[in-house]
Image 1 (cartoon, rainbow, N blue to C red):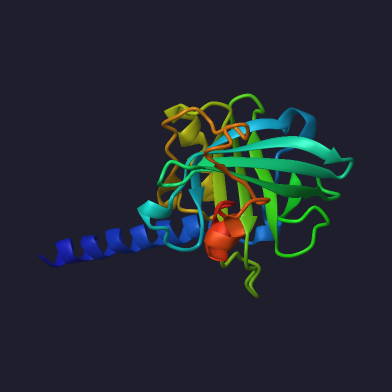
Image 2 (cartoon, helix red, strand yellow):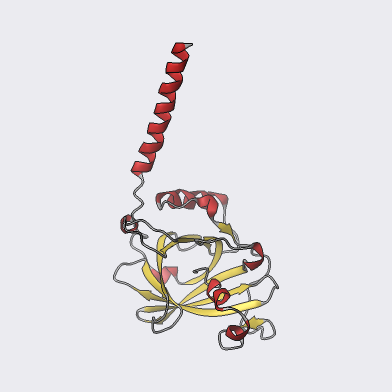
Length: 226
């Protein structure tokens, strides 16, 4: 009986050590995270469909957007225009613009809601992509004193409205290296053809009455950023 107790204690201590060792091997300081090696912006441009996303707060199912996608085109030499389309829970199309401002580090960009870079800004890092199938992006909304991120945002993108389980599995491994729990990501549904700005009876744009009829918190949530 005493031997069994000793053995149980040893096993328990070994398990604890394994957990501690695993945590110690993962550096959660944001400045250690690497973006896509030799990132090629030209290959990254074009349309990306959101497969999964993570924001640092709970989003009710009724407030989650469908058919969410980004289209990236060069706006100036140092800025990318982000054309965003999605459907709300009422199936109305939404259309917005945002802007990615380039930095000196390839793959590290800053997203803003205004073309001059004013107002609120958010980091937008391309962690990994093969340019033709998938992309994983990461943002930190609040840097803590110890260098870790207090408000993590992350997205898994696909060039199509679906993604293979193999690619999802590989991105989950990368997310673990970013100290992100992959099971916390929300899945985006793609059930209809992408919205078109020419569909005037269904599209709401920033130049129409959107800001007058919808609270600003919802306006910002279209970017899955707040």
